[in-house]
Image 1 (cartoon, helix red, strand yellow):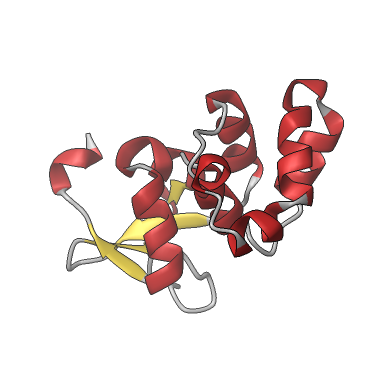
Image 2: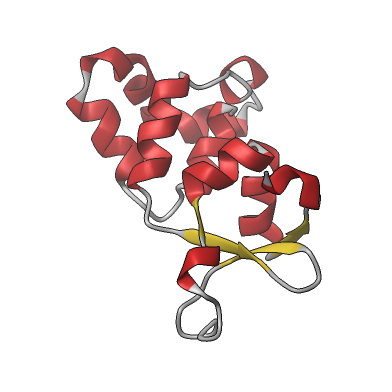
Length: 124
């Protein structure tokens, strides 16, 4: 996953900041987060498109409580308990499993646009 994608996916959460503060392995990401807005303003693609350490990505997404599900039209959508009362708990997909199955682009797009058509073959 690209750095900007992980920041975008976790927006509104302090999970990423907490992780990079607590673990010296990810100190470099702390400094990148400090200057994130400057990198965005400058469109510094070397930083923004930089691949995130896979372990940091895993830990952050596993700590993030958001869940997703695939609706009857084959669209991946974010689970909203107050609206999706009929969704069976066993059909929910964690953020990390969503990322593993569909990738960072799809995870970011479903949060940005509300839903993304996904391939049934990716469910296995």
